[in-house]
Image (cartoon, rainbow, N blue to C red; front, side, top):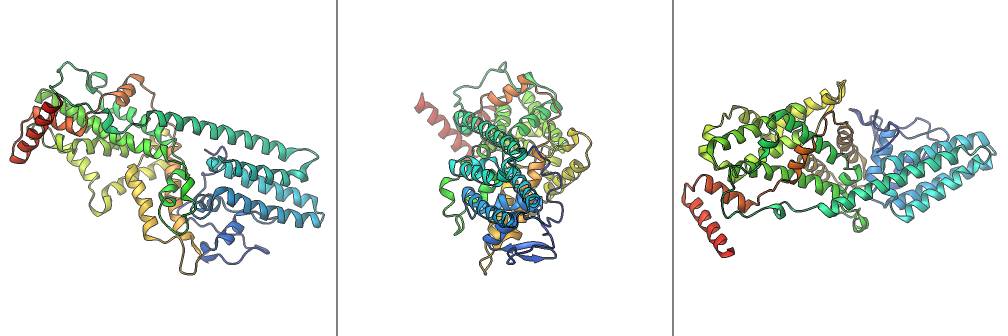
Length: 473
């Protein structure tokens, strides 16, 4: 992530992206509404990205254009076009023998490259992009032969870029090795587990502590999601603009790993409940997870909260009527109200907005935590992409669409940079991440053994499951 405070003032409520009034010979085809850039040709938008002697693009524009440009052009191709414009401007300044202006212009180009490499390091993963970067840097820094200040900046920038690429590559290799489908962890039961078997309550019986450890895991995973990962939700879609870009798009290991974590947590909750032998203990387990979900809500960890609720709403758990009859469900009803899907999850979005506002004015990391329900966040970006075209009827890029997508991604990036205020408990996290998780079939078996089938449909399901087990035996 950027070392410079690139996101601190980015993408406020208006997402203006206003241009400087004196644009000289720059392209005039971008369209503005109330001072906001809303559309333009790809060439004009690239022109708007490149600094001049009298202009430097707003950081909101740099982020939004670099983020969205990959839908229309490969990063190395964009870099080549930017380099061409830069060299052309440099040559014009050299003709005028204006050494100081040339150094000032070069410093702006270096700053643009620095912001680009810090915010989107993975754009430089291939040799073509690195070659273009080095070529631009070499040509631009020729005006600084005397003291070499710019060359030192370029050298540090390159070193930081290589470190960022190396770190991300290592993380992906780890994810590649351990990325397993949820069902692969399932165990088909032939008998009920012993009541003395280790469960979550034997590891952590405090709902607040468990919610904090879940939040630690969430923030750790979300820290490895990058803006270009999220933009693939758009660039993976079929369109005339991206057909040439989709073939070499990096696999979204981080998105898959995070989504898999949600599924694992849901199945773990269901497993912990269904495998308890005694009804009284099972009731206690249900109430414990309700309290954990409530603590997650209070923290601002909506993703874990939703995963827990989803686990308790799975059919093998939901059908345990005798257990639920003993549960004090008032708190659970409140949680379900917050996650009510009606009106496009209106209640959840209100709670999320409240957490976001709290985060903006917070004085501590504890109050800054906002972890949205990830699959809803992804669906929102997908929805924005589907209802708005990439290009307008006149062929210009619909940049207004990308302002909004960029704003939502920026919010996510801001939240993910919060440093977790809770200490890591290795014992609890080890259990959460490695405890056996039953498959859907195993959950139903455990559920039926806890509370027998109550209707013909359940009896048929239970009969089929037992037959399957006998055949396997």
